[in-house]
Structures are given as C-alpha cells and as structure tokens.
Image (cartoon, rainbow, N blue to C red; front, side, top):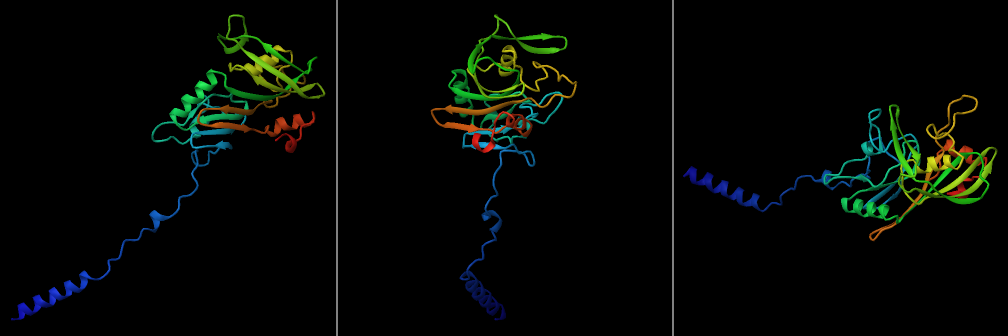
Length: 265
C-alpha cells in the first residue's frame, strides 16, 4: 500500500538524520575575553597607586571630597563602583583640598582589619607641606590636643587642653624665600591635624583658607599645599605601601626649595 511505502521512507530519513552531527549554537560572545575591569564608574577614574584583591590606595586629587555633601555629589565615594555584596569602603579620610594617598577597602573583612590598624596606630602616614615662614630647628614634635568648636558660621578645630591627644613629628626638607618644605608624620589622626599644628608652630600651610593667612596683596590663595605623601600598613593579610607625587601647583612651589620629581619619586 502507498501509505506503508510513505511510512518506510519517513522512517529511513529519520534514521539518517539521527546520525548527523548536531551544530552547536554560536558561543563566541560568551567566550570573548572580558575587557579590563575598573573600580570606578565610566569616565570617573581616580589614579590608583596600589591595587590588591582587598585594597586600593588612590591618589586623591586636590579639590575632590571623599564623601558627597550638600554642595557637590562628586566625591571619591560616588565615583567608586558598588559591589553586589557591599562596599567598597573608605578606610580613612582626607580633607577635600588635600591630595595624595587614600586607602579603600574592597571587602568588609579588609575594612575591619584596616580600621583596627588605624585605631591601634599601626599605620605610618607621612605628609608634605609648604608652610609660610621659617622654623628655628630642623626637626621637632608638637603635642597639642585638638577640640572641635562650632558657632553660627560653622566649625573648626582648635588647640584646647580638653581636646583629644594630637601629636605630629616634623622635619624640614627644604627652605626657600619666606617658605619651608616640611615632612609631617602624623602620630595621631585628628581632623585638620596637620593644618592646625603647622599654624600652631607659627608657620601656616600655604593656601590654607581656614588656619592660614590671606595673601598680603589681596590676591586669591593658591591651592592648599598639603600632600598625603605616603601610606604604609603591615596587616596580617597584606603589606601595603604607596607614595604620591605633589600636584603641579604644589610642585611648582617645592622646586624653589630643591624638589626634583625624579629624585623624590
């Protein structure tokens, strides 16, 4: 019968097709190598001095706040890409006008470890400052407790016996006409410590609008000449060390006191 013949032909074709190799769907897109990953939102990069799976040390530009505020949303925090499991987190902070080394924890366990190191003063923080005036000694240490004081116009830190312990070790790296280049080792981590301790020594930081002096000719102040020069942490899991170069406006002042970029980097 014709029906039986058609059924035999259909079965024969089905048998032949079952032995043909099956073509797999194209997977080129899933196998393509990923591009370089970045810890920042697109177009909002900050120079990275050191990167490990658990930490970043950023070279924060002068003028960039670490946290968003009422006057600006642009900050280190808002530039960092959030992780699905939380973070990253700032392990400490710098004033908006201070440039240089800023530690970021990429894991919560790393944040806790770093915070413990800061609290137990197991972190070495060196700053560079260009100050107005001169000091009679080449090195020394200032121990002046700091207290936050508020009024209708805002707040500032002040030297006060009731304040928190604040100690800074300093040494002169160079001298120029009416200026000094200081290295500051912050032995404690109080708000505005470097700025107010330099002012307390009688040598305010060049360009400091809060604790400094206005320009004698009434011109606009230059940028704050304060750099978080280096950061060192010896943690149980990581040994971290990084060094930042001064921004160009500060480097210009430093060159008058013998600073050479290649020699000091």
